Image (tube, rainbow over all chains, first blue to last red; front, top):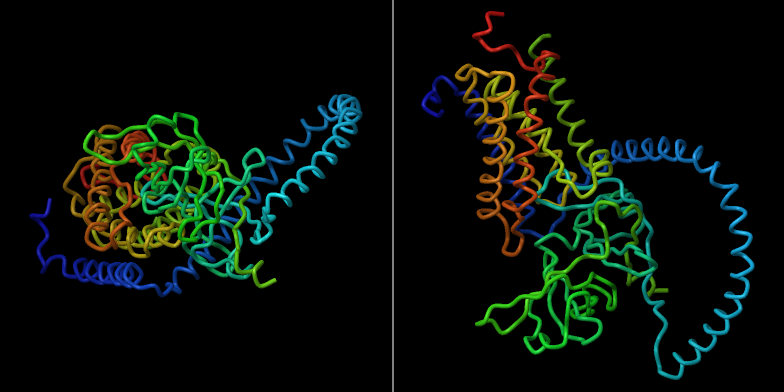
Length: 279
Length: 170
């Protein structure tokens, strides 16, 4: 294949290749080994996000319009059944208020603090992976809303705060989130029930004490430990899918099934601890 | 279609494909590996138009991906530039049938992408940033790219975005 590439015959092509490779390697070295953000990337991110927003919003408009026609048919049926349910809920509401009062009293007695120390910035997912090497999620909020690099990102799954990942790139109106499925992301975690600590990386929890093997099992919940402060504690990561370890190893290796379905997540919240603390 | 004109349309097509890969395809086919359509276009354009156009198209494709992913800028640009250039080295040296050769060619190109990505990451990435290149999803991507290759080859040929081969007599 390369037999025919002579410098004389392909001078122009080889010079172009040299220039393009120098540009690529220059960008790569600059960003990989320095903490300074790469301005052209932020501008590019904003530029492409315009199209991404356009496509996502257009798609949503059509799917919602088509959906609303079918929805009208079901509304009448649902209305009647909801009336019946409403009566039940009235009773439940009374019970709930009573329980809430009891709960807050108990919390006060046990010395718990309310989790009001973190501000949540809502954002919509406007894009995702363009290739399979780097998993990423693109959201429609950026530095204009106070989003900063390394901020944790969560989503609500069945009412529970579940970890999505962290912000790795920001432009004025867009941010790129690296999901916890990525192998370069490390999340300090703990098994919710038995409090064994470990480190989640690419949906595998490592460094879990071998002592845990007799107590833990598949289905146990894994949450953030809050260790080293990079992620707030008690955010759900997933549940244990399988447990393995080699004889000579001192720790267990837990495979985790995440709570968040990364390909279906539509809305997320970026956690801003500074904002609330300042307030 | 004039050469320059069709080259600019190819650039536009690659940008559109990158945006679609990150939006429509991403939302439409959840949990499934998305084929790298832009790579297929780069490889075919390179193979038919030559090294110069292949590498420029590859560079722009990679740069667009770099802007939209969590990768370090330059990573995809470098990988795709080399792919475009190497694909260009077979210009007028291979005879493309409608199905088998395009499939095999793209299978080889996707595999090459994996190898180049691994070497680039090994050389330039800081410790702990190694992307999962040879994973199950990448193997699936190789298969999907090869399956879609004949269709994309046909579309590019019919729209004259790639010229006929020198043996076709046109």
